[in-house]
Every structure is written in structure tokens, then in C-alpha cells.
Amino acid sequence: MSAISIMSSISPMSFDPKSHLADLLRTALASVAPGQQIADIVIERPRDPSHGDFASNLAMQLARELKANPRQIAERLVHELPVSGWVDKAEVAGAGFINFRLAAAAKTQVVKEVLVRGPDYGKRLAASPADKRPKMQVEFVSANPTGPMHVGHGRGAAFGASLACLLTYAGNDVCREYYVNDAGRQMDILAVSTWLRYLDLHGEKVPFPPNCYQGDYVKDMAEQIRGAHGERYVHPAAAVLACVPPLNGDDGDADAHLDGLIAAAKDLLGEEWHYIHQHALSEQLADGREDLEEYGVHFDCWFSERSLFDTGMVDKAVAELEKRGHIYVQNGAKWFRSTDFGDEKDRVVQRDNGLYTYFASDIAYHANKFERGFEKVIDVWGADHHGYIARVKGALKALGHDPDRLVVVLVQFVSLFRNGAKASMSTRSGEYVTLRELRDEVGNDACRFFYLLRKQDQSLDFDLDLAKSQSNDNPVYYVQYAHARVCSVLQQWDGEVKSLVDTNLAPLASERELALCARLREFPDMIEAAARDYAPHSLAFYLRDLAADFHAWYNAERVLVDDAAVKNARLALAVAVRRVIANGLHILGVTAPEHM
Image (cartoon, rainbow, N blue to C red; front, side, top):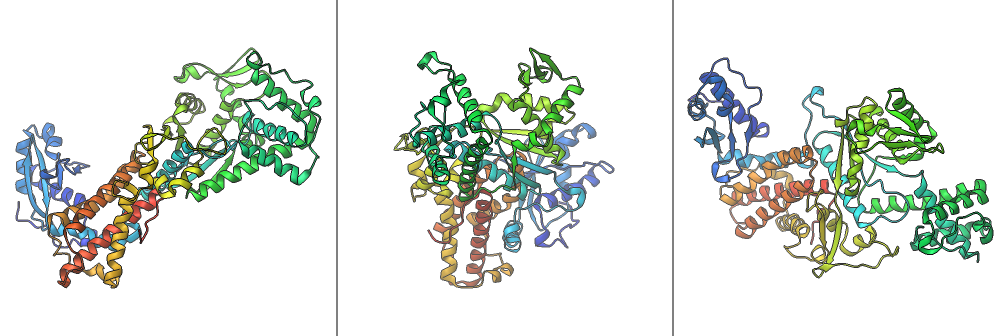
């Protein structure tokens, strides 16, 4: 290295290995190729730790401009590198990579940074207004309020909530939104299901259609209405069925029969239909809110689909598409030219009876998101909605919006396993396993963590026995136990944690200690990468690796030794590990217990 020193005034708290190494290379480049500018010098961690702590491909970037062999350029750059007390060694490898090995002091200083920044360690703070990240919206769960949340909703909720928190940690202004599907046929079906159960309670026997909502929760709502209003909404079964198309087993038209029952209910009840409809909606929406709150999933905005119609936003969106020439009329219905934007077929937005389709309200809803000022919109959908992406993006483009500002993340299905076999759990609905049942069996923490143990676009086999076990094989227990272990050590020590900030870290010199420091240093970069890739599962993997490094060190070394300098240095390292685990678990919505 060159005798020029660049270390002198760098504070441990301001030391960023990547920035420091980039500065060293920039200084060397000024000697090797005066006037040559490289806007972004890439510094990355080698996949193989034996290659060093960091590596740069700068020489390969320069090869074409300098018309020289990359390896020769790399050798010249290494020769001109200024001396730095933070760098132990720099060497050329392969076709022209420059590998750096940091000094022990450069590795251990991260402990001090973690202790000082505490809950903010890993957070990205904007250096200036120009450095501010986009205003983002994450819309997730958005289940029809027609029944209890099920285990599929649980995975979407865990993913969406963790992603929103991760994006916030990475410096974005994030709004968490739930789209309430409170308009349309599904809510009508729930309302008529409730009314039919209510009639049954009063002895009016209308055959209950198989395509109505079957769960006991529907009977519960019928009981509530009877308790509050007695016979107020009773009509004879004969009157209900008078104009309803018959349902004759396999020969009957089930949908026509159900639509007939809905029409009869609206006709017989008149204005009072609104009460039945609103009661069913309110009960199920409140149940869903409560379930999600207990699960640790919170929303900033609950957006009503009905408001899109009440405020004229759907009318406005369809009119704008028509004005731009993207709508045509066929058989009395209005069609959006979706095939012009990559969809497999055109889509109806308004039926011949004047009623809008779900697609029409979805167009208005997504247009409204951008009108509210969100620069990036992330929709978390079930995997079965894959075919819907092209038409929504196409409609946004047709309205003049950039479709790339909408990101759709698909969440795959969940299967529950017990004793190695697919589980069959009893449910109140008789149709699916509810999120409450899963939470009651394994707990919130296991739910949240296990849902993130696979990338969201891969199907997940949820091992119920493993999730409940208190063993190192259970990843959430393993990570939480690392946090609790540090808490136990601190109780035995009985000192002031804040006193560890100024601890001399020089005694941290073993291979395990330096590897643990390196793992702590990865946390901010991991947050940045996981946020960029919309990949909270990466954080779950990181925490598992950090816990493994900690347990290996803890089992090999005593922390509370007689040597005060060594003891304090090791305590500082342990507290830094505890803090990073707590920060990571917070993002995932998992608790960090002090006792296990």
C-alpha cells in the first residue's frame, strides 16, 4: 500500500467499511488514472469468506476505458492504496478482483455502533431531503368480510405486515391499507344467508342453498338480530320462494336460485334490507379487525369499496377510459380493450343491466391510490389472482399512469401438517382452518415466524408439532432463546448496560467473536436488500444465522469471566447481538422474550 494515510480522523461511529474502502480505491484511482471518474465503486461481500471481508470489481469496470488487463489494473490499484488502520490486507484475486481483509478493530467497532443506535440500528436515515425514499402503500389481506380469517389470510397478513415494517425501516414513508369489499354480490350472499337463518329461527323453513355461507357464525348473527329485533324481519317462506327459480338438485341453476333469493329479500324487506346487510358486514369486519389486531397486524387505512360508488369514482374512471378510446359497447355491455395492454381477452366493466363489475371498481380503486400521492403501490394477493395482474396494470396504463409503479406480490397457499401428515383440524365453519384456531394452537410468534420461513411465492408446509416444540429445531424458539440467554447473563452480571458503550473492544479477538461482529455488520445491508426485493423471509433467515453464530460462541466461551476487560468486551458483544435480534424480531412482528 501507499504510505499515504487516510485513517487519521475517522471516528469509529462514522466508520462504514464499504464507504471507507470505496474512498481508498478512489484515491488509488487518482494515482493510477488521473482524471478517470467512477461514479459508483461497488464493494460487496465475497460469497466465500476465505476470500476476505469485502471485494471490488473496480479493475474490471476500468478495463475497457484504460485498454488494459483487469488483473494488471488491480495490481496497480492495490499498490497505490493509501495506508489504513482499518484494513489489514488487500490482494488481487482471480481475473482482477481486489479482496480486502479488515483489521480486527474495524470489525469490532460495529458493537459500539449497535449499542449507541439501539432500536435505530439498521434503519436508513435520509441524509438530505433529496435522499428521501418514495411514499409507498402496501395493501394486504383485504379479505371479503364474509367470514373468519383462515390460515391463508394469516400468511398474507404476516407477509404484508412484515414487508411494510421492513420498507419503513429502509427509509420509506409507508401506509398500510386494507381494502374492504363491502359492495357487490358476496356481501349480498352473506346478508341473505343471515336472513335465511333468522327466518329458520322463527319457523319459516326456506331450504338453505349450498352456495350460501354455511358457517355457524352466520347462525350467530341471525341470533343477534332475533335478540335485538324479535320478529321484525320475518316474512312467510311461501312469500320468499314465490318468484325464486327452483333449485332441483343437479338440474337446478344454483346461481339463479341464489340471486332470486337475494332479489326476494330486497323486495320483501325494502329499506330494512340495509339493516340486515349492514349488521352482517359490521359483525364480520369487526371480527376480522379484532383477529388481526390480536395477531399484531395493524392498518393505517381501511378503504371502503362502497365509497368508490358513493363518490362517483367508478363512474369517473370508466368515463375517462371511454374518453380515451379504450371502451367499446357490445350486446349492451361496456368492455375495456384489455387485449391492447397484454391481457388474454377484453373485460366487461359495465353489464347490460347498468351494474358495474368488480373489475370496474378495482380500476377506480387503483387510480385513486395514485391520486392520493403514493409513488409506489404494492398489492399483496393470493396466488390464484395471478391472471388479474395484466388487466389491472393495463387499465392503469390506459388511464395515463405508469403501470410499473404498481407491484403485485403473490402469496402461495399453506398446508398444515401434524405428525408428518396433512392436518385436519376442526373448525367452526366446517370449511377451513381459521387463523384464530392456528394462533390458539401454536401462538402468534410461531405463526408470524413460520409463515416467513419460505419465500412468499412458494407453497408452505406448516409443521404444527415443530412450531409448538421448545427445541433448537424450532427456528423461532432458537432465535428467541438467543435473546433470552443474553438477558439471563445480564441478570447475573447486574451491571449497567449503558456503561458498556465505552468498553474497550480489543479483547474480542477470537475467530467466533470476529465472525459474530461481521454478522452484526451485515444487518443494515440485509435490511436494504430485503426491502428492495420485497423479501422479509431474508430477515428470518438472517436472524436464524445470527442466533446460530451466537449460540456457538456462547457455548464455546464464558462471558462472565474474572478478567474485567474480557468480561466487559464480551458483555458488550452479547448486548449488541440481543439488540439486533430484537430489532429484527420487531420487524417480523415477533416478541423478544427475556425469559424462556
